Length: 394
Image 1 (tube, rainbow, N blue to C red):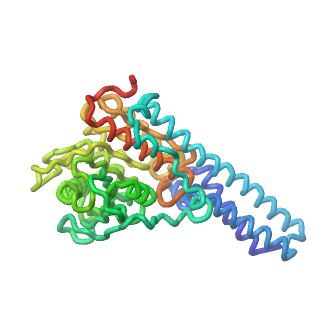
Image 2: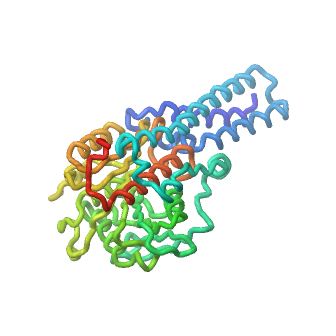
C-alpha cells in the first residue's frame, strides 16, 4: 500500500467533498465545509496539479502494484471528477454576473455607459495567475500606502490607500471593509484582487480597519465606517481621488457595514461629533455579506434592511449559494426588501457553488465578480448625474 500517496489522495478527496457538497447543517458540519472546502473551491487547479503529481510519482516509483494501490488511483480519479465539477461552477460565475447586471440595470445598460469606459469593460481574466499563481495579487503599477490614521483608536483606526504609481487625479474612490464577524479581521486580507484592479484603472482605493467586539458594539463599528468616509472627503484629493465619488464595499461583516453605511447617509445618530460631514456614497458593494441583526441590546436597529428606503443608492451584491457561514436565504430576503422600496437598482449575483470568503485570491469565480463590480461602477458613474428612473423598465 503506497501510504504517502493514500494520505495525499484522501486529504484532497476530503476537501473536494466539502467543496462539492458543502453540507451546512448541523453547525459543526458547516464549519468543516468552510474550513476544508474554501481553498479547493476557488483554486481547484492547484489541487489537481498536486493530485496528478502524486499519482505520476507513485506510478514511476512502482508503488501502484497492488489492488489496494489501484483502489487509491480510482479514488484519485473520482476526486479529479469532483475538481472538474468545482471548476465548471467557477467558470459559470461570469455568465451569472452578466445576467445579474442585465436583470437589474436593463438589457441596454452598456449603451448607457458608452465611450472609453465601455471599451474597458472587457473581461480581465488573468488566466496565468488563476492557473499558476492565484495567491499573487499585487501589481507593480499600484502603490500601497499603509497605516494612515483616520481616528483615535490606534491600530483599529488605520487604513491603507492603493493608487496607480502614475498618480492620476480625480479618480473615483472605493472604500473596502474587511470580514471577521465583528470580532476579528484586518484591512490587508480580503478583496485585494479588486483593490489592485481598480487602482490599476486609476481609482483611489481605501481598505480600513474598524473597532471590534468585545471592546465596542454596534453602532460603534458603523461610526468608524462613517469616519473613514469623512477621512476620504477630507483627504482623497491628496491621493488622487475625487471626494465626491465614493463607493463603499465590504466582505461578510464588512458587507453588512458597507450596506448599512450606504443606507444611513448623513444620519446624525451614527456621526457623533461630525454631523456636518457628508457621508453619502454613490453606490455600495457587498461580497458574501451578512444582513441580519447583530444581537444584544441596542437602541438602534443593527440590521441594514431596517434602513432601506426609496433613496437607497445602487447596490451590487454577490453571494455563493453554498455559503455555509452566511446562508443564502437571508441574502435573498434582504435583496427583495430593498428592491421593494428603492428607486435605484439592486444587482444580485448568486454564484453557483460559491462558498464564503471567495475574494481572497484570483479565481475564475472572483475575477468574474471583479469584472461585474467594475461594470456596475462604470454604470453608476455614467448615470449618477441623470434623473433617477427605474432601470428595470429600460
